[in-house]
Amino acid sequence: MITTIFLISILATALTLSSIWPNLIPLWIIFSQLFGVIVVLAFFGLMVPFYKRSDSNTPFFGSLTRNLSFTLNHFILRLKVIPKGLENIPKEGKVVFFANHKSYTDPFVVLQLVKRNLAYAVKKGVYHLPLIGLWLQAMNCFMVDRDNDRDTVKRLMKAIKTVEKEQAMLIFPEGGTKDRDNELIEQMKHGAFKIALKAKADIIPIRIVGNAKVRNRIPFYHTDREVIFLKPIPYDSYKDFNTQEISSLVLKQINDAY
Image (tube, rainbow, N blue to C red):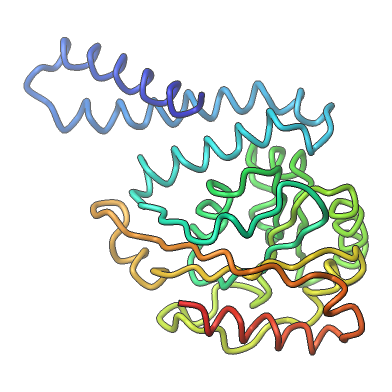
């Protein structure tokens, strides 16, 4: 749906501007894409009140978010997302995804592929952006405020309840985009694994490949992003571990996957 709205907006604007300025092709190409983005954002603005009133696990809104991620990845960021291990994603049940994080585009490539309503951990600055922040709140995303531990703990409890209701959660346990030129994870925040442990959820590690290329290629060149969903780690297999031990287990699996 979002892709269709975006493409129709671009086509309509391009045809209009090309008839007005037929000799200024670069100008109407740029303006048509910009207008397409504005139309999509306006559509999401209209949908926000309905999303906030509904259950965050409503399939329709999950589908909209996936479609928006596809449109953003394919047409704007020019990312070719190559999935592996999609069969490892359970269709139901409590699950938390943990992925390496080297690019700000990482959430979008995962959101595009997971056919479940998916919330994710996001830093405070993004959570308070106009319109985008409202949509993230409706998704039940987990806001991380590194300057306010007490507030983060409160939101952590809410994130645990979200997972308990079988809405999937995506966490980047490195605590930010660390050492972008190194594909491997060097360390993780052990506290990030409290959500899975307290919610008694299965863990699915994710390895995202191609992070280092993104910032040097967007927006002029296509970039391949390989997303590998590893085999689930059942709750029963790690329930007696502490968060540091879980962190070590997940770190090794992600680093060894390729």
